[in-house]
Amino acid sequence: MLDALKPTPTIDSEHPAVVAFAEANGEGLTHPRERAVKLYYAVRDGIRYDPYALVLTIPGLKASRTLELGRAWCVPKAILLTAACRALGIPARLGFADVRNHLSTQRMRQTMKTDVFYWHGYTAIELDGKWVKATPAFNIELCEKFRIKPLEFDGHEDSIYHPFDLDGHQHMEYLRFHGEYDDLPFDEMMNAFARHYSREMYQGPVGDFDRDVEEETRDKAS
Image 1 (cartoon, rainbow, N blue to C red):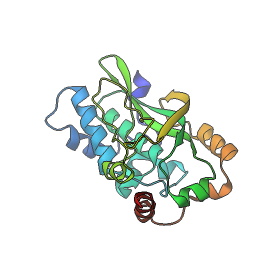
Image 2: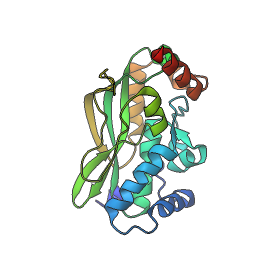
Image 3: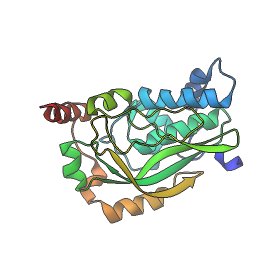
């Protein structure tokens, strides 16, 4: 339990910016569940999902760095939610799974050369003695553009991605859960990336993700 409350090199829950973010979103709320739910939505929608903002270093994955940038991919968004929970004394861990994700852009598909996202990140939060999964990656505007149901979180049940979008097309398939960790298993994650992705992937797709999303969703609509 204690380790799920401690700061780490990436889960920098004692950083002034992280503490301020957590306290601002937990203000006026007393129950840990209410505070965790408020933090979930603050990270989900306040930090824009951007897989092009791929920085595979400890400094680049810090919760405080994600707050500074205002956009991030799934792992640093999960790190931020974990750090914000810990800043308020709510035990939280990082969880990982391999998923087949049908939300992508042409540029991402060309760079990744696969539709499998290895070591997709989420947050596990302990509330009233129960660990629940919370996945804050896709902000609501992105969900609306891709016509996928936004993930809600109530602090009682797991919040993981739906298998189908609003039109009945495949959206997300969970292939394997890797477990939940008190700290980012950086080397293990990087070894998996090295096995499954080309070196080009380490640089991240170059471009404007928001613009690519507009093009992708416009093509689908037509």
